[in-house]
Each structure stands twice: as structure tokens, then as C-alpha cells.
Image (cartoon, rainbow, N blue to C red):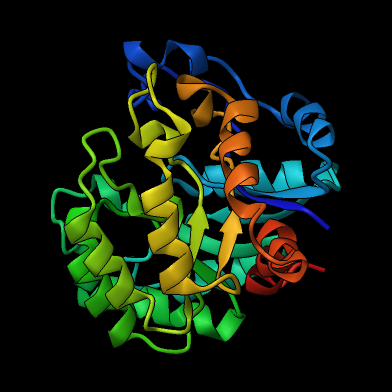
Length: 276
């Protein structure tokens, strides 16, 4: 079974979605399951994980409703306020829906780069253990030192780094990011999504070879058993689209063994998110 472990749906709102600026006009519209399903079928992908893009419980409900209506949406990574003293009650409420598989907060956008080390936030993360939910880590490279401390502080949670932590592929900055990723990968409960890479490259002029050094680091650090494919659709549409993005990854992973390819393209996501 093949799984796209990272994509988004939204009803476009120019105020809420102000992060979609003029340079991203290609995605300034609604994106619903009926838009994604034919793309998945084209690439023989059996299902997907819908990931939050808005910091609200309304977003969690929006995605869970889609998951109830469309069987190909195998799981949802939603949002709850992890700083809320009553966060355990909110997690308990949403975890009654079996399609909820994880939680995410947009850490990359926090002015406090060490936001994840706030004691109240960490209490919220620790509460995920009781409901067997995973946590998606969305950070930029400047936050990876804090991220390592964060995952070290809270054991027993399954973590996955989204978008290989968004290295500066456009300017070929790799060394500091690579060292940080190798350090974090030493924690066996931390996985990595090979997703979102094209948006960190030169959108109009990237070449397939731009990504190979970064993919080498990820696969060497995490191993084929802890990496998974994710498209970051529809965001990938600003930098070439689904077909070109998946082409990069297909070409790179062709050198893996049959078993390693099966794990990367689906089995790892099934294991990590505990998909039925």
C-alpha cells in the first residue's frame, strides 16, 4: 500500500491564509478531497494523511469530517492548543475519532524559536502518550537544536520531522542542517518526512540534482525504516507540482531494495501513524 503522508485541504480565506502571498497565487483557492483523489490515483497511491494548516480546533473538525466522508483519507494530524491547561480533555475529545492520528503546531512561525521547550507546551506533548497519538514537528533549521532538546526531554512519543526541517536548498546551505539532523536521528522515536523539498529550492529553476545531497543525509541518518513519502500538496504546486515533485523522489528511491521502497512509500507511514 502506498501512502502520501503529508497533504492539506482548505477553504481559502485571505485573512486566515495570509501566508499564501502573491508569489503563491497558484494555491490561492479551495483545495478539497475531490481535487486530490485523481492525483493519488494517477500515481497509484492508496491513501493520504491530511495535516492541519490552521491553528484552530475548527481545522481539526474540518479535516476529520473529510476523513469520515472519504476512505482514502487514512488519518488526520490535527491541532489542539497544547498550551491549554485543559489540553488533556481536548485531546481526549478528539481522540474518540479513530481517524485522528496525530497533532501538529506550526512551530516554524513562532517568534520564540524555543517555543517547544515551554513547560506547558511539553506537558501538552506528554499528554499525547496516553492516547497513542504522534506529533509532527514543523520547524526551520534554526530550531533544530531546540528540537533535539525537546525530543530528549519527552520520551515515549512518536515524532516525525516534517519537510526534512526545511533546509535552505535554494542557496545550497547544508552543513549545519545536516549535523543537526544526524544528531536528532539518533533518537529512535524520531522519523522524517521526505516532503516539502521543492518549496525550499529555487521554485522556477531547481534541478533534480539539487535535492540529492539532502536526501543522502536524511536516508543515511534515519535509515530506510524511519523515512516516509509526503507530497505537501497543494503547496508543492508553487514549485512544479505533484508530478515533478514525486518524480524526484521516485528517481532517488529507485536504488533502494524492494523492501526499503515498500517501507518508504507506505509501510513506514502505516506503522508510524498506526493506520488500520
